Amino acid sequence: MKISQILAATLLLAAPLTVAAQHSHKPGTAAHGHKAAGETHAHKSPHGGTVRTAGKYHLELVQQAGEVHVYLLDANEKTMPLDRSTGTAMLLSTAGKTTSVKLTPTGDHFVAAVPAGTTLRTAIVSLKANGSSLSARFEKLDAAAKASKATAAAYTCPMNCEGSASDKPGSCPKCGMALVKKS
Image 1: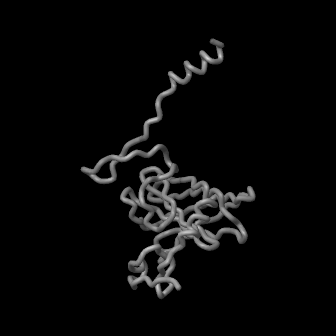
Image 2 (image 1 turned 180 degrees about the vertical axis):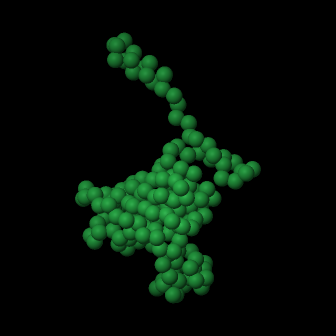
């Protein structure tokens, strides 16, 4: 056996097994695993985007035409108020160009314009909220955008409220009107 093979075997045996950190969202409920902050999150996304863990919170990124929307979620994936919260996003395009954008609070979430003609590959979102600095990395956004176009929202608010698009019938989260099927 060569020295490099022995060294590799020793390192493999000495390396700790990766164990997901456990935390429970509600008292009395089963714990679930999170590998690390910013990794893909197994929970449902309340606004149809991608959810990542960010400390004791979650961040959800939703791509819409020419914009990214970022929601701050609590441990139960409920949208949190943005009182005195600020944020930025570092956007990497499929062409390899990096742009930094300011996240502007709009109602219950942040919005940032994506430069015209840009197809996003990665977004790194950084927020200061509730006395905490939070960040999450959202990757493979170009693949997610292609998938969402294939399963585009079929229902929307008749008042065209922002964030009302849905893939199933229901009511508008802004005004409460019944969503109507797109023609």
